[in-house]
Length: 301
Image 1 (cartoon, rainbow, N blue to C red):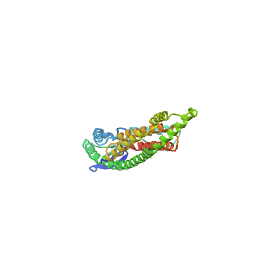
Image 2 (tube, rainbow, N blue to C red):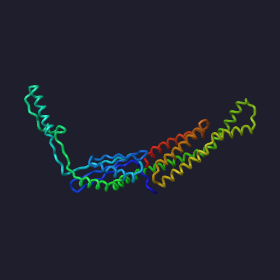
Image 3 (spheres, rainbow, N blue to C red):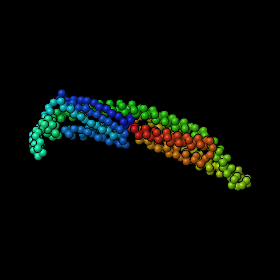
């Protein structure tokens, strides 16, 4: 059996380039119909994006995937002063003080905290950038492996819940099958009574009654739907046991199961008797179970 992956997961790894640069590479995945990649990289790593996308596409199939790279430079950092901007702020301060008759001098500490007056700039050469890209690329496959470990655990849990849902659907179908004969007998007696009312007590020929009953039985019988539902459930469980990429295929099967449940409800909606009421209850429980399963399947790759 191949692993079944949930599309929800998170993983992160830390790495470094010699002693001057450290980095944290994080990957987060949530459900999506297709593979939707979003990369958040520092400006100095523009050349890395194409290679990252190629590796991610080779190893992931579906999901909204966000990859974030945070770089920490431990050395080669210069502090730069913008003297022109600082001078402009000081002149503006003194001019304001003169206009309002205030005797005061600007606080240099406050001035240096003004955005743009001071800045830090990393001094990084081409060799450092190249080394960073190589180190990040070397961590991508281990990071995907770590992400998939968590996604496989959640996928196994979802698969177990889905199997339990299919067993419940199968039990509903078996109970429906047992109730079918009682429903047909109730419908036959109802038809006999109705015909007697319409003919005002005049005896109705058995052949006529049987013909009408056959038409009614054909319209209301749910045997075919029960057979198809069993088949879909068996196929669903077999696919779960096979594993692999199942999300879209299982969603299609659940649509078919929902169609069979709707048809059964439609065919039995006008019937009377305890068996018919129970079949309606079972049909509604089926639809609720199928909807729950569809929500879970949306998270499978």
